Image 1: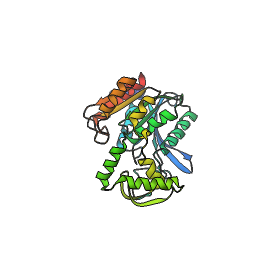
Image 2: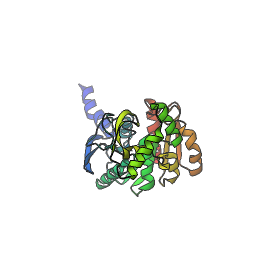
Image 3: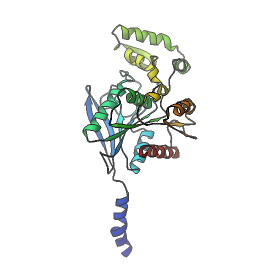
Image 4: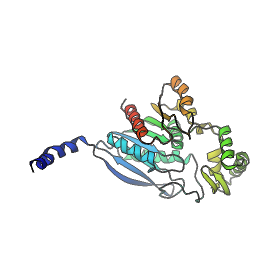
Length: 299
């Protein structure tokens, strides 16, 4: 009984004192006729402490493993975070995008949605925001940071961000689907230029979805040759302190470390190459990744 009283009177208050207070909730807002949702993890210093605004990768969602893990580990380090779900043209979207659903979304739609959530944070009292993006979300985050920078944004973190070359994408499309990309892209470009970008292209292979349906606008947005699709091209243009995280065993964004290292040396942003990590930075690699993010935030 004396031991129980000791735990109640001494140890429990101490544990409460040293453990960060964390609360999680889904928050929503309206944007261009659809409901957007995000997972907000608040710690004791919310909203005036650092808040990390997180964007997921291709056709994914904010509860995928890497997003959920980063939010959990940030909370353990007393850092709030807002992990958004890009709508991809759907109302109140959750989970991975269903390939049987017609694609009526653009790569650049994410920029507007990141901006809407940044405004939401500002309206709720946030004073210092760190932008974070993974994979394609890393490119969209970098693009946003270049074109729509503002005082509220203090730092930028890009985890295994997308690289791009038309030559590689064309080759990859042929290998993946056994079809030439260029005729499909030219057809889509013609429709867009003629003002018919909403035309549905049926039985088309699109991003990760075989034999799906996509608008011409969507196809052009994801496959058009645009330098901004290549995140290393954008990196030197980002004005805020920048951290790039790469894994040596990443089979999706290959050789990122060697591509970025010369840029890091020249422009002075931080590059952290994690030995053995794949594209999703699972298990102990996630701890190492978030440790480097916290060190970067605290600089």
